[in-house]
Image 1 (cartoon, rainbow, N blue to C red):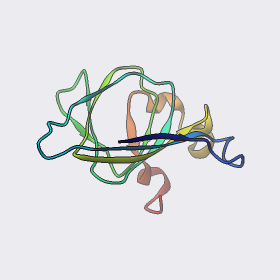
Image 2: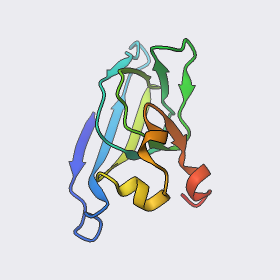
Image 3: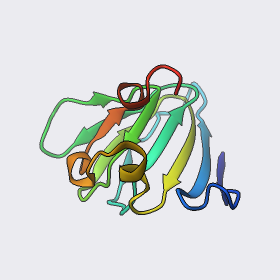
Image 4: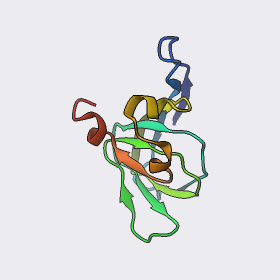
Length: 125
């Protein structure tokens, strides 16, 4: 297991609050638990480096599959996160208003959702 926060360099600190490296590897005999994720007041750019994550919302029985790179809006509701056996993510937690300054997308349009970062920045992301 790796769960590490990294402070950004001074040049990025206007936009980035922290970088996070998150890694969980589960053995073949282990039932991978669902992670109940509480609301957080942050916008993030997340790169999934191994298996993708699925997310369940309380008002929908259908799971949504995260793309390889997502822009996560602020969530005000609890979500259920379902990971594979090899979960490895690089998460960039943005400063307040940074996502709007970078993309022009108002924060209310991303509340309780995520979008494919390629739709905003193209395949180079």
